[in-house]
Amino acid sequence: MEFKVIWSDAAIADLHEICAFIARDNPQAAYRIGRGILDHVRILGTFPLIGPAYPRGARGPLREIVFRSHRIFYDVSEESRNVEIPHVWHGAREEPGF
Image (cartoon, rainbow, N blue to C red):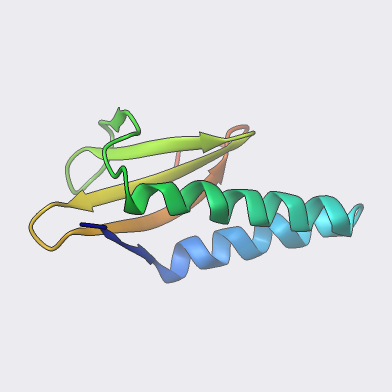
């Protein structure tokens, strides 16, 4: 049975900012990055525990997967069968504060 992937408002804003920043110089690259992140997250519906634990999460250990230079943080609830995406972060930025 699939898990439901839920994007937080903050994660949607992160993705928008990432794509807008890249689109200033290369709209096609922005589309490829945005589409790639969305496609990469889609796998979490089938394999929610695929990413390693990220122990610095304020709500307990989060997990993360990486797409190119971007870190996709997520939280798995096996009881409700949900995967929540709180943030998408560029790897060159400081650690996120959750």
